[in-house]
Each structure stands twice: as structure tokens, then as C-alpha cells.
Length: 365
Image (cartoon, rainbow, N blue to C red; front, side, top):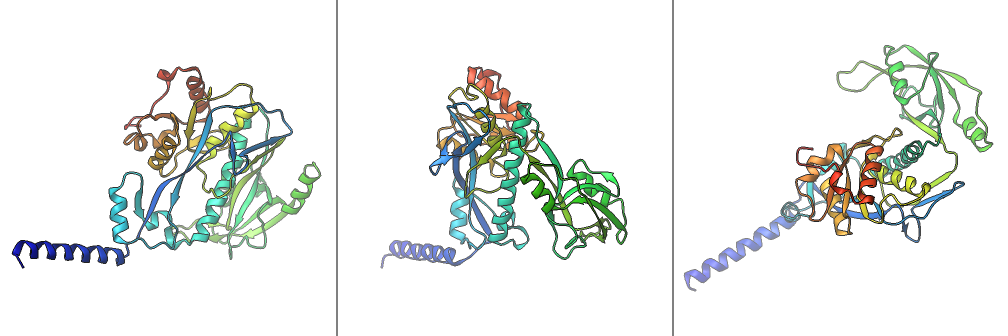
């Protein structure tokens, strides 16, 4: 066999061997890719995404699309070939497995956590939208979750309304932790609450629950490394009563990043005219009850997915601007927003064609 042919044959066999080895070698990485994008003003799976009853609504045109990222499952074992292909590709992103599933989190745990964040983002979107329109919303602080085997287990329950701690009125979820941590581990703290069952019954009857119960709990030491602060084992959140019904119908989506686009969609449906002027606007960002927009993960993939669907403008959280601007899809304008007011002003400029006035993202932010 000629030397050149033998060399080519040997090289080919080595390459095949390496490829075969790469297929069987598993690496601790996961993959992210552009996910579906849904118009909050339109329909999804045959029904409107935003369903409002009990209040006048108005026709809308254009797009206010929420965007998503698709990720590999927690039990997916990526091989070396797939990892290299993902690293070399443009539309996908390979990240350490622990980035998506920290502390050995299972697929079920991750799905549950994402579902809870998605539900909370919907509530905050409704509140932010109604506040933007000057519509009053009643709110109160509740026990959001109770940690298993904590001092609060069996004493406090999810949905209990927290009126005060040690006699000091509670006005925001952060107040609860501040009041509890004034104690040392082992000391007693008194919660004044409206039990969840009584609160639910009052809401159903259209009344305000007034009967309260004092619950005394002995604090424990935080399990955080090096921490000696007192805890009772709950997380506090906020619940609301809305003056009319707003339902968000969107299955198989998780996480908090659609909050901004849901809020804008609600505002558009509740006001005459069109926020977009018929333009295709997409975006992302968490939103809190006061309309402040927060950063999200996977921004580069969301801009790709949005542009592939036809988006012309992308509402981008301020803290994501620098990363997004490093590789902006051609034909897509990244608009920097930090509050719902920023987003509303940007939509006004987009609708009127004053795009030169838009606050655009740059690689510096």
C-alpha cells in the first residue's frame, strides 16, 4: 500500500475513533437554545393569551411578544461531540449543568420552581399594569411557603395573612424577615395572622377578614454557613385582590421573565388605541408590583428567537443591554428599559415613528 494512502487511511481511522469516543464520553454540560415566542395580544393554542372580563377592553394590533429559552432536561447526558458542536454554533449556548440545575436539582423540582415563578410574575404583571393605569389594587402580606421541619411547620400555613410581628404592623414582605432577625435564635416571636381558610372564605363572600390569631414561634438558627441569625422557616409574599378578572392563559412556560410583556399586553387591551402602532415588538424582563424591570438569563438566545419570528424592536432590561448588544441579530433594534414607564414611552416613540429618540442598548449598557 502506498505510504500516502496508508497515512490517509490511518488518519481517517483515528478520526473515526475520536468521533466514536466523543459520542460515548459524557460531559457535565447542558444546552440552551431559542424557544417559542408568543404574542401576548393574540391567541395561543386556540384561545386568547390575555382574557379580561368585568372591564371594557379595546381591539389591539401588532405584536407584544414574550420570549423564551429552551433548555435540555436535568437528566440529559450531553456527550463531548454535542458539547463541541454547541460551542461552535451560533444559535445555541452550552453552559455547565449546575448553572441550570444547581445543587443536584431534579427536573421535577426545577419545573415546580419555574411554575411558581411564572405564577408570581403574572400577579406582578397585573398589579404593575393596573397601577400604570391608576386602577387601585388591594394587597396584603402572606405566608408564601413554609419550610419542612422548621419551627413554623404546623404553626403557620401558606396563605396566612401576616398582619404584624411582635405587634409591629407588616406592610411589605421584607418587613417580616427584618422583624424576625431582631431576635436571637431560641427567642420567641409572635405572629398576628388571619388564617388562610378564613381569608379565603372572606374573599369568596366579598368581605374583608378581620378575625386574627396570635401564633408564638421559637426561632431557630439559620443553616447558612457562618450565619447566626434567627429564622422561623417561612418566606413571605404578597397577595392581591383585583377589581375585575384578568386571566393569563399560557401553558408549558416557566420562570419570571415574561412579566414585562404581560403587563404591557394588559395595558394595551385596557386602553383605546394601539401601543405598538401595528409594529412587531418583542421583549423580556421580570417586573415587580411597582413596575421595575429586572434582568433575565439567556438574553442572546431570546433576541435570536424574536428576530426569527419577525420582531423589529426588542424591549431589553437595562442590566441585560451590554450582553445583548454584543451580538444583536441584524434588523433588530434593542431598546433599553428599566421601568414600565420606560417601556410605555418607548412604545409611544415606536408607534409614532420617532425611533431616533429610542434609548438603544450599547455594549457599554
